[in-house]
Length: 59
Image (cartoon, rainbow, N blue to C red; front, side):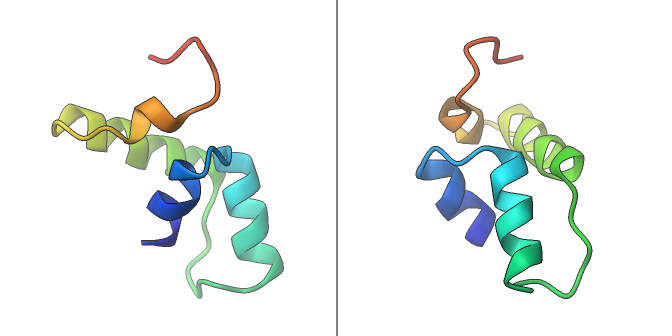
């Protein structure tokens, strides 16, 4: 998934959403908040996407 790929490149959720909107890479409307929810849901399920967030105050 594109969001995962860009997170691993240390892009912020805001940058990811901006990029997706600018180049119309998804038909569905995406927000940075939705991206954060996806990251925290992944963490709750044992995933590691949260580790790619830039902020040191990771939830």
